Image (cartoon, rainbow, N blue to C red):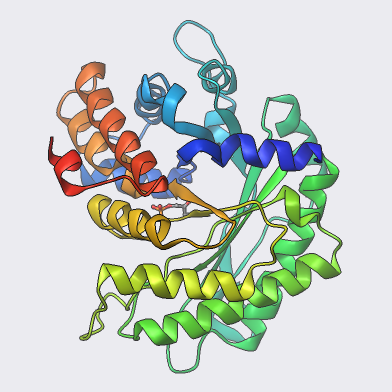
Length: 336
Ligand code: 13P
Protein backbone atom coordinates (compact mmCIF):
# COMPACT_ATOMS: atom_id res chain seq x y z
CA UNK A 1 0.00 0.00 0.00
CA UNK A 2 1.44 3.40 -0.93
CA UNK A 3 1.80 6.14 1.69
CA UNK A 4 -0.70 8.25 -0.23
CA UNK A 5 -3.23 5.43 -0.27
CA UNK A 6 -2.80 5.07 3.52
CA UNK A 7 -3.48 8.78 4.03
CA UNK A 8 -6.57 8.66 1.81
CA UNK A 9 -7.93 5.65 3.69
CA UNK A 10 -7.22 7.22 7.07
CA UNK A 11 -9.40 10.19 6.11
CA UNK A 12 -12.42 8.30 4.78
CA UNK A 13 -12.52 4.82 6.39
CA UNK A 14 -15.02 3.51 8.96
CA UNK A 15 -17.73 6.01 8.11
CA UNK A 16 -15.52 9.01 8.75
CA UNK A 17 -15.98 12.03 6.52
CA UNK A 18 -14.49 15.41 5.76
CA UNK A 19 -15.47 18.78 7.16
CA UNK A 20 -15.07 21.32 4.34
CA UNK A 21 -14.32 24.50 6.30
CA UNK A 22 -12.32 26.06 3.48
CA UNK A 23 -14.64 28.89 2.52
CA UNK A 24 -12.61 31.77 1.15
CA UNK A 25 -12.87 35.02 3.11
CA UNK A 26 -15.34 36.28 0.51
CA UNK A 27 -17.63 33.25 0.85
CA UNK A 28 -17.28 33.16 4.64
CA UNK A 29 -18.24 36.83 4.78
CA UNK A 30 -21.47 36.03 2.92
CA UNK A 31 -22.20 33.14 5.30
CA UNK A 32 -21.55 35.26 8.41
CA UNK A 33 -23.45 38.31 7.18
CA UNK A 34 -26.43 36.08 6.42
CA UNK A 35 -26.64 35.40 10.18
CA UNK A 36 -25.78 38.99 11.17
CA UNK A 37 -22.24 38.39 12.37
CA UNK A 38 -19.45 40.73 11.26
CA UNK A 39 -16.82 38.93 9.23
CA UNK A 40 -13.49 39.56 10.96
CA UNK A 41 -10.48 37.20 11.16
CA UNK A 42 -11.31 36.78 14.88
CA UNK A 43 -14.95 35.80 14.26
CA UNK A 44 -14.04 33.45 11.42
CA UNK A 45 -11.52 31.77 13.73
CA UNK A 46 -13.90 31.62 16.69
CA UNK A 47 -16.60 29.78 14.74
CA UNK A 48 -14.16 27.35 13.19
CA UNK A 49 -12.30 26.74 16.45
CA UNK A 50 -15.64 25.95 18.09
CA UNK A 51 -16.26 23.24 15.48
CA UNK A 52 -12.71 21.86 15.47
CA UNK A 53 -12.73 21.40 19.26
CA UNK A 54 -16.04 19.48 19.31
CA UNK A 55 -16.08 15.90 20.61
CA UNK A 56 -17.44 14.52 17.32
CA UNK A 57 -14.11 15.27 15.64
CA UNK A 58 -12.55 12.14 17.19
CA UNK A 59 -15.25 9.71 16.15
CA UNK A 60 -16.63 11.03 12.89
CA UNK A 61 -14.30 13.47 11.15
CA UNK A 62 -11.29 12.09 9.28
CA UNK A 63 -10.11 15.34 7.73
CA UNK A 64 -10.76 19.08 7.75
CA UNK A 65 -10.19 21.28 4.70
CA UNK A 66 -8.89 24.70 5.71
CA UNK A 67 -8.50 28.02 3.95
CA UNK A 68 -5.12 29.80 3.87
CA UNK A 69 -6.13 32.27 6.59
CA UNK A 70 -7.18 29.50 9.01
CA UNK A 71 -4.16 27.22 8.58
CA UNK A 72 -2.02 30.17 9.71
CA UNK A 73 -4.14 31.01 12.78
CA UNK A 74 -3.70 29.99 16.42
CA UNK A 75 -6.20 29.34 19.21
CA UNK A 76 -6.35 31.65 22.22
CA UNK A 77 -4.00 29.31 24.08
CA UNK A 78 -1.50 29.51 21.25
CA UNK A 79 -2.08 26.12 19.61
CA UNK A 80 -1.86 26.12 15.83
CA UNK A 81 -5.08 25.17 14.03
CA UNK A 82 -3.47 22.18 12.27
CA UNK A 83 -2.31 20.94 15.72
CA UNK A 84 -5.81 21.38 17.15
CA UNK A 85 -7.22 19.27 14.31
CA UNK A 86 -4.49 16.61 14.56
CA UNK A 87 -5.05 16.31 18.32
CA UNK A 88 -8.49 14.85 17.56
CA UNK A 89 -7.00 12.29 15.18
CA UNK A 90 -8.25 14.04 12.03
CA UNK A 91 -5.89 15.18 9.28
CA UNK A 92 -5.56 18.85 8.32
CA UNK A 93 -6.09 19.66 4.64
CA UNK A 94 -5.90 22.85 2.61
CA UNK A 95 -7.68 24.39 -0.34
CA UNK A 96 -4.96 25.34 -2.81
CA UNK A 97 -6.79 26.68 -5.83
CA UNK A 98 -7.11 30.44 -6.02
CA UNK A 99 -10.66 30.47 -7.30
CA UNK A 100 -12.73 30.10 -10.45
CA UNK A 101 -12.23 32.90 -13.00
CA UNK A 102 -13.98 33.73 -16.27
CA UNK A 103 -12.93 31.31 -19.01
CA UNK A 104 -11.58 33.07 -22.11
CA UNK A 105 -13.72 32.41 -25.21
CA UNK A 106 -16.53 30.97 -23.09
CA UNK A 107 -17.28 33.81 -20.74
CA UNK A 108 -20.32 32.24 -19.03
CA UNK A 109 -18.06 29.48 -17.76
CA UNK A 110 -15.17 29.28 -15.30
CA UNK A 111 -11.63 28.02 -15.19
CA UNK A 112 -10.06 27.40 -11.80
CA UNK A 113 -6.71 29.10 -11.29
CA UNK A 114 -3.79 28.60 -8.90
CA UNK A 115 -1.11 26.55 -10.68
CA UNK A 116 1.54 29.28 -10.77
CA UNK A 117 3.84 28.93 -7.76
CA UNK A 118 1.82 25.95 -6.51
CA UNK A 119 4.85 23.70 -5.86
CA UNK A 120 6.31 26.25 -3.43
CA UNK A 121 2.98 26.89 -1.69
CA UNK A 122 2.48 23.15 -1.24
CA UNK A 123 5.83 22.79 0.53
CA UNK A 124 4.82 25.50 2.97
CA UNK A 125 1.43 23.92 3.66
CA UNK A 126 3.10 20.55 4.26
CA UNK A 127 5.37 22.18 6.84
CA UNK A 128 2.31 23.70 8.50
CA UNK A 129 0.86 20.18 8.88
CA UNK A 130 -1.38 19.70 5.83
CA UNK A 131 -1.54 16.12 4.52
CA UNK A 132 -4.18 16.56 1.86
CA UNK A 133 -5.42 19.32 -0.42
CA UNK A 134 -8.43 20.42 -2.42
CA UNK A 135 -8.96 21.96 -5.86
CA UNK A 136 -12.44 22.61 -7.22
CA UNK A 137 -13.35 22.88 -10.87
CA UNK A 138 -16.87 24.17 -11.46
CA UNK A 139 -19.25 23.48 -14.35
CA UNK A 140 -22.70 24.81 -15.25
CA UNK A 141 -25.37 22.93 -17.15
CA UNK A 142 -27.33 24.84 -19.82
CA UNK A 143 -28.26 23.99 -23.42
CA UNK A 144 -24.71 24.90 -24.50
CA UNK A 145 -22.68 24.05 -21.43
CA UNK A 146 -20.49 22.64 -20.11
CA UNK A 147 -18.46 23.35 -23.25
CA UNK A 148 -15.62 21.16 -24.42
CA UNK A 149 -13.23 24.02 -23.56
CA UNK A 150 -14.43 24.09 -19.94
CA UNK A 151 -14.30 20.32 -19.60
CA UNK A 152 -10.80 20.05 -21.09
CA UNK A 153 -9.16 23.02 -19.37
CA UNK A 154 -10.51 22.22 -15.91
CA UNK A 155 -9.61 18.53 -16.21
CA UNK A 156 -6.10 19.52 -17.29
CA UNK A 157 -5.72 21.89 -14.32
CA UNK A 158 -7.00 19.22 -11.90
CA UNK A 159 -4.42 16.78 -13.25
CA UNK A 160 -1.51 19.24 -13.04
CA UNK A 161 -2.59 20.15 -9.52
CA UNK A 162 -2.87 16.48 -8.49
CA UNK A 163 0.57 15.51 -9.75
CA UNK A 164 2.21 18.42 -7.92
CA UNK A 165 0.35 17.57 -4.70
CA UNK A 166 1.40 13.92 -4.82
CA UNK A 167 5.01 14.94 -5.56
CA UNK A 168 4.86 16.82 -2.26
CA UNK A 169 3.57 13.76 -0.34
CA UNK A 170 -0.04 14.85 0.04
CA UNK A 171 -3.37 13.43 -1.16
CA UNK A 172 -5.23 15.57 -3.69
CA UNK A 173 -8.98 15.83 -3.44
CA UNK A 174 -10.14 16.08 -7.04
CA UNK A 175 -13.35 18.09 -7.09
CA UNK A 176 -15.16 18.54 -10.40
CA UNK A 177 -18.45 20.13 -9.32
CA UNK A 178 -21.34 20.18 -11.77
CA UNK A 179 -23.66 22.75 -10.23
CA UNK A 180 -27.30 22.01 -9.41
CA UNK A 181 -28.40 25.53 -10.51
CA UNK A 182 -30.75 25.49 -13.50
CA UNK A 183 -33.81 23.67 -14.77
CA UNK A 184 -32.04 20.64 -16.26
CA UNK A 185 -33.23 17.09 -15.72
CA UNK A 186 -31.41 14.55 -13.56
CA UNK A 187 -30.63 12.57 -16.72
CA UNK A 188 -28.82 15.55 -18.21
CA UNK A 189 -26.92 15.93 -14.93
CA UNK A 190 -26.01 12.23 -15.20
CA UNK A 191 -24.72 12.64 -18.77
CA UNK A 192 -22.77 15.82 -18.15
CA UNK A 193 -21.30 14.72 -14.81
CA UNK A 194 -20.19 11.45 -16.38
CA UNK A 195 -18.51 13.31 -19.25
CA UNK A 196 -16.76 15.71 -16.87
CA UNK A 197 -15.48 13.00 -14.50
CA UNK A 198 -14.38 10.79 -17.36
CA UNK A 199 -12.29 13.59 -18.85
CA UNK A 200 -10.75 14.28 -15.43
CA UNK A 201 -9.58 10.68 -15.18
CA UNK A 202 -8.23 10.73 -18.75
CA UNK A 203 -6.06 13.69 -17.74
CA UNK A 204 -5.07 12.27 -14.34
CA UNK A 205 -3.88 9.10 -16.08
CA UNK A 206 -2.03 11.09 -18.75
CA UNK A 207 -0.26 13.01 -15.97
CA UNK A 208 0.69 9.72 -14.21
CA UNK A 209 -1.25 10.51 -11.05
CA UNK A 210 -1.38 7.59 -8.59
CA UNK A 211 -5.13 6.97 -8.56
CA UNK A 212 -4.90 4.97 -5.31
CA UNK A 213 -3.71 8.18 -3.63
CA UNK A 214 -6.54 10.55 -4.48
CA UNK A 215 -10.06 11.18 -3.19
CA UNK A 216 -12.75 12.09 -5.73
CA UNK A 217 -15.18 14.77 -4.58
CA UNK A 218 -18.09 14.84 -7.00
CA UNK A 219 -21.64 16.16 -6.93
CA UNK A 220 -24.51 13.74 -6.57
CA UNK A 221 -26.76 13.27 -9.60
CA UNK A 222 -29.68 15.62 -8.92
CA UNK A 223 -32.41 17.35 -10.88
CA UNK A 224 -31.61 21.05 -11.39
CA UNK A 225 -32.91 23.36 -8.63
CA UNK A 226 -35.60 24.72 -10.98
CA UNK A 227 -36.43 21.45 -12.73
CA UNK A 228 -40.17 20.72 -12.66
CA UNK A 229 -39.83 16.94 -12.58
CA UNK A 230 -37.64 16.21 -9.57
CA UNK A 231 -36.50 12.63 -9.11
CA UNK A 232 -36.84 10.79 -5.78
CA UNK A 233 -33.97 10.32 -3.31
CA UNK A 234 -33.91 6.64 -4.23
CA UNK A 235 -33.38 7.61 -7.90
CA UNK A 236 -30.69 10.11 -6.90
CA UNK A 237 -28.77 7.31 -5.22
CA UNK A 238 -29.19 4.95 -8.16
CA UNK A 239 -28.17 7.47 -10.80
CA UNK A 240 -25.22 8.64 -8.69
CA UNK A 241 -24.00 5.06 -8.33
CA UNK A 242 -24.55 4.38 -12.04
CA UNK A 243 -22.44 7.39 -12.94
CA UNK A 244 -19.55 6.58 -10.61
CA UNK A 245 -19.52 2.87 -11.41
CA UNK A 246 -19.13 3.68 -15.10
CA UNK A 247 -16.48 6.40 -14.98
CA UNK A 248 -14.32 6.03 -11.87
CA UNK A 249 -11.31 3.67 -12.20
CA UNK A 250 -11.28 0.90 -9.61
CA UNK A 251 -7.93 1.99 -8.10
CA UNK A 252 -9.58 5.07 -6.56
CA UNK A 253 -10.08 4.29 -2.85
CA UNK A 254 -12.99 6.54 -2.17
CA UNK A 255 -15.49 9.16 -3.03
CA UNK A 256 -16.46 12.02 -0.72
CA UNK A 257 -19.47 13.94 -1.96
CA UNK A 258 -19.96 17.69 -1.76
CA UNK A 259 -23.39 18.85 -0.57
CA UNK A 260 -23.69 21.56 -3.22
CA UNK A 261 -26.70 23.45 -1.84
CA UNK A 262 -28.76 20.47 -0.65
CA UNK A 263 -30.29 20.86 2.80
CA UNK A 264 -28.63 19.04 5.69
CA UNK A 265 -31.30 16.34 5.76
CA UNK A 266 -31.39 15.89 1.98
CA UNK A 267 -27.60 15.50 1.79
CA UNK A 268 -27.69 13.00 4.66
CA UNK A 269 -30.61 10.99 3.29
CA UNK A 270 -29.11 10.78 -0.20
CA UNK A 271 -25.73 9.66 1.14
CA UNK A 272 -27.48 7.04 3.26
CA UNK A 273 -29.30 5.61 0.23
CA UNK A 274 -26.12 5.67 -1.84
CA UNK A 275 -24.47 3.51 0.80
CA UNK A 276 -27.45 1.19 1.16
CA UNK A 277 -27.43 0.57 -2.59
CA UNK A 278 -23.65 0.61 -3.05
CA UNK A 279 -22.45 -2.56 -4.73
CA UNK A 280 -19.08 -1.05 -5.76
CA UNK A 281 -15.83 -1.33 -3.82
CA UNK A 282 -15.55 2.43 -3.42
CA UNK A 283 -15.92 3.99 0.00
CA UNK A 284 -18.72 6.57 -0.29
CA UNK A 285 -18.65 9.31 2.32
CA UNK A 286 -19.14 13.03 2.78
CA UNK A 287 -17.03 16.14 2.36
CA UNK A 288 -19.68 18.65 3.28
CA UNK A 289 -19.43 22.36 3.86
CA UNK A 290 -22.93 23.78 4.20
CA UNK A 291 -24.61 20.46 5.03
CA UNK A 292 -22.38 20.07 8.10
CA UNK A 293 -22.23 23.67 9.26
CA UNK A 294 -25.51 25.42 8.48
CA UNK A 295 -27.46 24.71 11.69
CA UNK A 296 -24.36 25.05 13.84
CA UNK A 297 -23.66 28.48 12.31
CA UNK A 298 -27.22 29.61 12.94
CA UNK A 299 -26.99 28.58 16.59
CA UNK A 300 -23.53 30.12 17.01
CA UNK A 301 -24.75 33.46 15.65
CA UNK A 302 -27.29 33.68 18.49
CA UNK A 303 -24.54 33.57 21.09
CA UNK A 304 -20.98 33.28 19.80
CA UNK A 305 -19.67 32.66 23.34
CA UNK A 306 -21.88 29.62 23.99
CA UNK A 307 -19.61 26.93 22.60
CA UNK A 308 -21.58 24.04 24.01
CA UNK A 309 -24.85 24.69 22.19
CA UNK A 310 -23.09 25.11 18.84
CA UNK A 311 -21.01 21.99 19.42
CA UNK A 312 -24.08 19.91 20.33
CA UNK A 313 -25.61 20.74 16.97
CA UNK A 314 -22.40 20.06 15.08
CA UNK A 315 -21.88 16.77 16.96
CA UNK A 316 -25.35 15.61 15.97
CA UNK A 317 -24.86 16.57 12.31
CA UNK A 318 -21.49 14.80 12.06
CA UNK A 319 -22.96 11.71 13.73
CA UNK A 320 -25.88 11.63 11.27
CA UNK A 321 -23.54 12.02 8.29
CA UNK A 322 -21.33 9.19 9.53
CA UNK A 323 -24.39 6.98 10.02
CA UNK A 324 -25.30 7.82 6.40
CA UNK A 325 -21.79 6.94 5.27
CA UNK A 326 -22.46 3.49 6.73
CA UNK A 327 -26.01 3.27 5.32
CA UNK A 328 -27.36 3.24 8.88
CA UNK A 329 -29.12 6.61 9.09
CA UNK A 330 -32.87 6.95 9.61
CA UNK A 331 -35.27 9.83 10.15
CA UNK A 332 -36.03 8.40 13.62
CA UNK A 333 -32.35 8.66 14.60
CA UNK A 334 -32.28 12.13 13.05
CA UNK A 335 -35.13 13.35 15.23
CA UNK A 336 -34.19 11.53 18.41
P1 13P B 1 -20.70 22.26 0.09
O1 13P B 1 -20.86 20.94 0.78
O2 13P B 1 -21.32 23.40 0.85
O3 13P B 1 -21.10 22.21 -1.35
O4 13P B 1 -19.16 22.60 0.10
C1 13P B 1 -18.27 21.62 -0.23
C2 13P B 1 -17.10 22.19 -0.90
O5 13P B 1 -16.00 22.01 -0.46
C3 13P B 1 -17.31 22.96 -2.13
O6 13P B 1 -16.09 23.20 -2.74
